[in-house]
Length: 430
Ligand SMILES: [Zn+2]
Image (cartoon, rainbow, N blue to C red; front, side, top):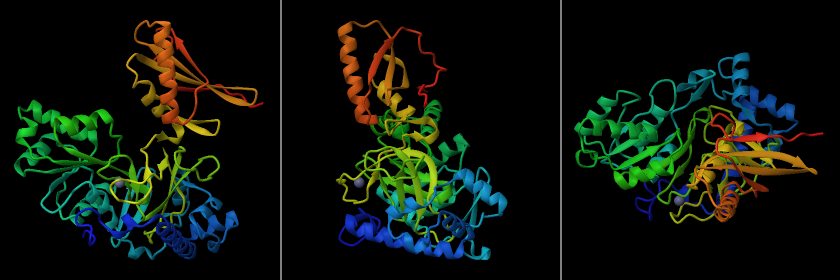
């Protein structure tokens, strides 16, 4: 399983491709995928023809900008008009191995062959032969249960198809079978631990849990710290999208972002223009699977916001990393060409102990966007303290959100209510 010369560290050769080899590899996979999908999926042909683009014009990742982004709502509409797959199926229907369902509904055909790459995400998190793992994602309708189960098996681990719910049965299973691994959401693992403690167990002494793998929910730094330091559980997270059939990016031991999988072309784009953005710039994650021949989805807009980094990773993997999910496109607004996301602003503001509430106000003066941060403090503070806090806030805001605040206003206690939106856009465009 692990590649020669690098025992036990990497799952496959793709993970350590030099940048220029990866560029060539992805461009080549992409052109093959595009040609194949255009020929076999009527919906793809329609999209290309409408955009006036021929498949041979898509030779590089950059060329994808010529094509529109397909969103979940488009997919639902197209599947309704042309059931069941909306014209995206590229093989005869009898060759479809499994069909998953996402809310919408969206029907997602998958072929079993070639889905082994998800295993990379578990391998990087340390899952191996000898591990006994509960997979607490649902095995109904959605891909998470069965695909993660198989990925665990591909790493050699023993997988228990627990599915969701049944807290007490989960706890008893973990105890009786000396379960070493958990797959699910961080909040569900915390629920299991707390419940076990309520039942009188000493979690660290009585259970054998060593590692946990998360997706589908933000892993808050405080939760990660509790799991790692108080319970000695190694944690790793991955970014997965059901419509494109699984995990797209995964954490290594360095935990400084999620390496992109080479089975997809992943772009970070301005959701309004579809233009690709550079490292560090926040935009929408747009995905083109280049290893799934069944499903001709090209440029699927996930609605999730992130940015990427090209910084080399000490783990030795060479793929760029997603810097975490900053929020949804619907919770963000564009200010001076950069997306400001409510969740990121919150992360910055609430990391300062004296701050109780905040609100961002965006206005426009003399053809320029202005961004004001309103801050409410827990207690009275001196002018000096406020000045210091304002300067620290501005610096951190700029580091995290990549945009400079024009003003910070300290407002009276009670001036910002919990119900008010975190970002208010008061710009007028005359
Ligand atoms: Zn790494």
